[in-house]
Length: 421
Image (cartoon, rainbow, N blue to C red; front, side):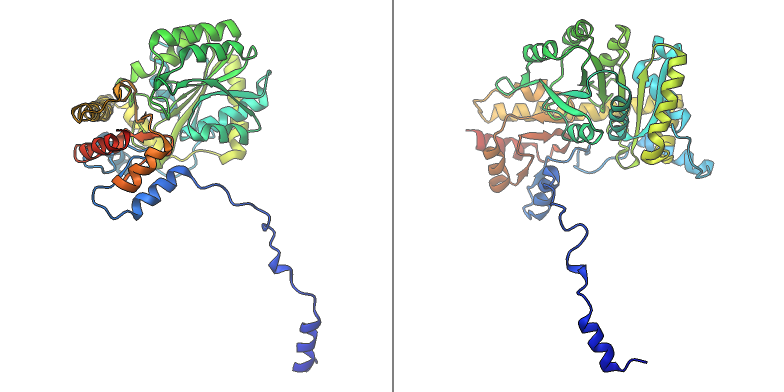
């Protein structure tokens, strides 16, 4: 048996443990999240006038998170029913996906009524886009790249790259007019290789709030036909943009009507306020029911190793609202109310800027649509807004209009006017 002294000497002679060289010691620090940085700066500010216009979530007229009454009612029905907590099938809650397809494509949709649309529940819009990118990477027979508008939602590029695809871009936003660069958009789509995959924002383009008109959508569809481009459509704001679920679905419905077999990604985060429930849907329009069955089988194979099957509660809420005639009508009124509040705040901000005597053209604030607006403010002006006026937004000048309230709109207008004189 070793003495205490011998044991101590053996320990001293033992090779040094490699605990100082960790397995992950070479992992570099990632860049900070732009929106998180805005929120942190806002929280640290003690001024009572402070405004956070960075968060992409709806707020009521008091600036507070809003749970839709229809969502509360659906939730109560679900709790009262005492459902079990068993796993959903891989493609999700069928009562939800069936009605989500009707909401997106319309009850008179030809491919829907012919049983040609493969659809799966997804983990909100992000999950739908991830499935789309994985499906394209695995099965799309042509170039493994997706064209994004410049700019696009910050997560689009990361989702596409993580699926092993290349990101390419096409012109979209015109900084000079603070509007749509439609000529540039058409030029770039015509210059893209035939059969390229192109991502389109169905409505309420994020981050600019700039959408094509219906006539422009028709021209875009014609270019897609001419070049045999493949449309991947991201519809994160149906109903939330204009207040009409039908008007906001014009682009995907028109494309389908024109014979495009689109891929569609839906989110119910904004239009139902189900942010934390992560409710979405991914669908593909197919040529036949037989093709749909094959596509559906491969979607299941893709989803299984990603997250096995989706969560149930949020899908039950959305499915209950969409299936119940009374709740659905109530929800349509509520989503229009949210859209109308945002439209009203845009108009009030514009009016006050005009009243203050601003020489700048702020008409884009009213012509843009949806939760976000590109103000045209420079990074220097954005910094001054935060430092001198306690107004926080992202460096690119994007504001979340949902963060504007009757109580802070004048301070916001006065602050913008002060930094843009």
